[in-house]
Length: 266
Image 1 (cartoon, helix red, strand yellow):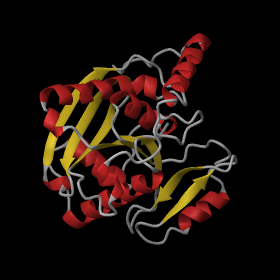
Image 2 (tube, one colour):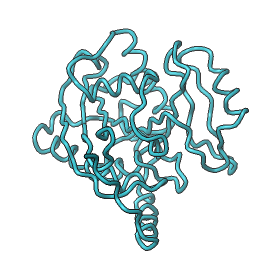
Image 3 (cartoon, helix red, strand yellow):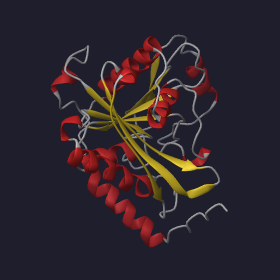
């Protein structure tokens, strides 16, 4: 029998979560901090990590929390580390507060890696969700980045409608204008700031990726990294032997649909 979804949190909990986001947001570094980020070819980058929480079909209270570290630029050829564990999810899903439901399990996965295989610590994490592209400018990629102090990039499959950004006809026309893999356009909010970039990951994909800064990386570098990962996956073929690696291959190539629509990307 499928597990029951958690009850919605009280207003006092949401206010506490919002205060916690505001407190942690002050620690976000939205610029490059690593030597490999300074090189246009990402020279010096050797380990790219990806994290994901995959829910059991029909049960929003059970999920597999996964962390995978891949050798860069080999990616699919060499899986350096993988941690996949079933977890019981008790916090409810609330739009804008996904991190409080998922990030604790991802932080634990990173901590296990640092204890068991510290030499394999990823130099950057791709996070299934948004970073600064968020109602309060502090999505799951920012949250995880600040708590782990790792460079993080938000990679989302759907547009989170914040600061005047909407999935209207203009947005659809802009997406349609992405003719070739690697084409991008900026997501500029009503406040005037660029909150992220829309990327066509490969030629046969009709669904773009929404890239945003998480922590310790600038938007330009974040986009360059995701473009490179997409290109390497296409050049080198399929990834085998890892559900989390398969998730990220499918995700970057626009072939994935996992969480509930409302739960995808904040």
